[in-house]
Image 1 (cartoon, rainbow, N blue to C red):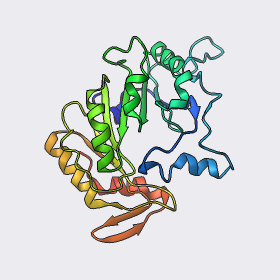
Image 2: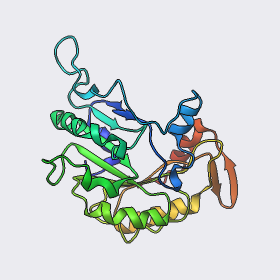
Image 3: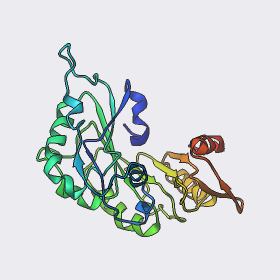
Length: 249
């Protein structure tokens, strides 16, 4: 899993696993959080963190006796919360146990709380579970400088950086190296989306090329600026427009 964010290509199928739902906003990137936006449509308070009915999905058995989720699957983990959220400390040990049991599958989570990582590990973590990839998200220079030194030193087998939503020009060059599996960049979705400038995207791409780190442009976001012109891009087209730019390395 050299490329943590794209490692699913090595596995048979992918499945979403949200062991808990709800989160707390911790930085600028959280302002227009999609989880809050989705929950708000149903008059649900996304700041209330709750264990979900799908908590035991990885180890749930089918009628035939085998696991419901087959061997070789890829789990997108905790995408409606944060795996390192303080509220989930009481449940995380059991989540780690399931991840360890399903060593035949891969798990990936994205976090804004990498500074809590050392407090959230199982006793047998060692240099990291071979089937776990962790992505650290940074939305601006301040968070890159705060989180990435911690991320770089953390005992994790497979690491990737996610700049989403990208809110300003970021210099990642002090942190890029062989330890980074990939860098993924994307704009912000939603009606209140803040600007994502294509020049910022290309700047990070250039940094990645110089450092020999794979780069992926995931989505434009809804409020996209290119060559000084602003575009309002519908959600359904944001990924396609990013692919159309053809700048992945």
